[in-house]
Length: 121
Image 1 (cartoon, rainbow, N blue to C red):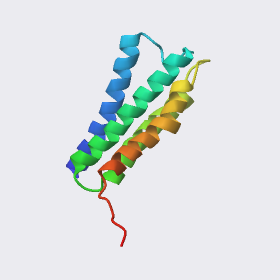
Image 2 (image 1 turned 90 degrees about the horizontal axis):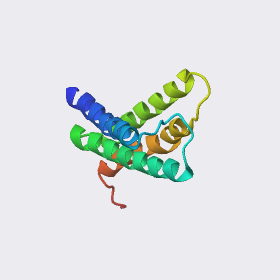
Image 3 (image 1 turned 135 degrees about the horizontal axis):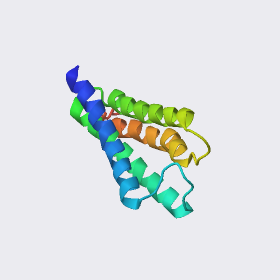
């Protein structure tokens, strides 16, 4: 059980730390309007790290990788929803919507990449 929790936490941290680093290094506020290029590039970046996080969770867990990827995706979605609900005042919601509708599903896909392949019979 500890290994499963560690797998999910590690997968989520891969995503979250990469996001914090991106916004710190680029000096962009994820809650403000950005250029189209930056929005697309940072969304693709986030999707990539969500995929890696879901994959890592499945790999670390060693069993039920789809469930681990879904758990990481659920944490990403939960964080985006909390951010949307708790956001004070006016501000852009592009990063939360991207996390909810694009990045969370990529974490699920990352876990699915670790799942054993079934051969048709």
